[in-house]
Picture 1 (cartoon, rainbow, N blue to C red):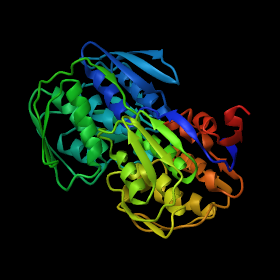
Picture 2: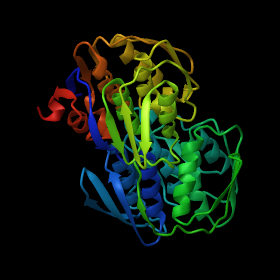
Picture 3: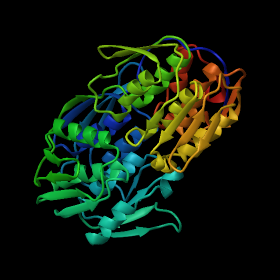
Picture 4: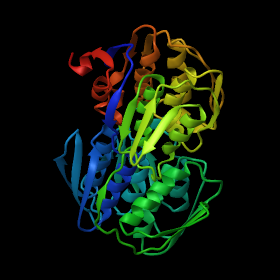
Length: 433
């Protein structure tokens, strides 16, 4: 675990926001399922993205990596169609998206395969898939007591009706949407409760359409999937990530002017709602084409429903803490099953820094303070917690000691370089200082 020391400093300047992690996963998988050559540009090779690339290579895709500027890569992908399992095990590292997207794909071929992972991923909820396995006579075995991973699978998906709870992670639905079009017959996904995280399903359907896959979405309750479809190769550029951009947008609101480039105003990303939230709280945010500019603002607390944007909670905890009055976050139950228990972790770090946050069963109640005091905290091995702590330092009266700063590598490996580029002051062994 790497520890850094962050000194208070206001951030200012301009930067290009990293490419969307959600879109990147889906584009890489779709290209890996297409027969022929796809070019996926503007990919950031974070730990999660490397996990998805390696998983698709294990299923037969061939990927060449060409470095662009600013730590971006273009991936030249020759799809593994039909799928051919190249290894006995597929390693998902700590990526929940990789895990839940790859499992249905692994069941498109008959060989026994072991799905492995690390960290909290080995205990992340998987019951929606277990239910399907039992219904569809797919053999599964937990290879370590008390853990969901490693998981051994043997059997093949068959066309038919798949019922799944719409209130669980949308990653299970997306996994099925990837795989079912490739079966020999038609299938239906029926949701047994209203769909949460709808924007992630919208992203999936958009990417699938770009790769030639047609799915009929009936009111977000039934998805009709024709069988015998084929993924078509595609040249695809990944757009900027509102989830990562949110940290810099808040940094500008509580600090000085920051210009965030490559944020598509027509994006399907659910975390685009950060723009509306900042405006509702009184923040000064202006848009021009794919660029957002934020300036120091006096903000006021509001109630925020995060059912469709749970990844925003850590940085909303920082913004809410530095806003007048009370900010209430609701409908965030699923945050307890992320890289950390994010409700607990957000409350823990903010309170340790001099904030005033109370956990509820599904959210947070945040009382505004003038500034943070500083102090010692841990990232809880969660990339979004580490980045939120960095932004909190802008309005700290003293230094912040952050243990586990390397957690940012999961999604944004050059975060600390961008932080320094905008005027942040961080010293630690993981920064080479």
